[in-house]
Image (tube, rainbow, N blue to C red):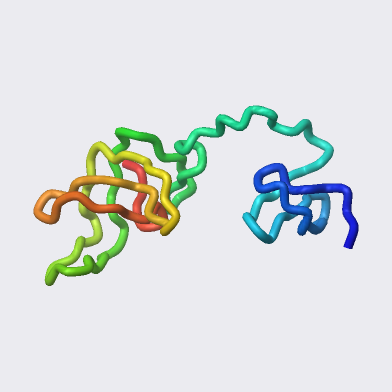
Length: 118
């Protein structure tokens, strides 16, 4: 399959058209080729991490855990409604982009889909 559009994020040629957007199945990037390309590769981590409601998270935000979470190696878990102050966003390959300290449990990483911004 020969197409003239390669993914602006990962440079893959394995892309396809979906309506007026092009999609890269390798990295899930979607883009409109009629819009000017974002040549600014300094996309901040904050703009990529969204909470369960779609709000952008940034370093220092306070969040609330939305459901009970199990913690490996611990008999207790994190209860839904637990407030976490002063989060830090980190690069993560395992899907846990939030680094924080939870009172009574300690330092840990959370998935953004299980928190909402306060």
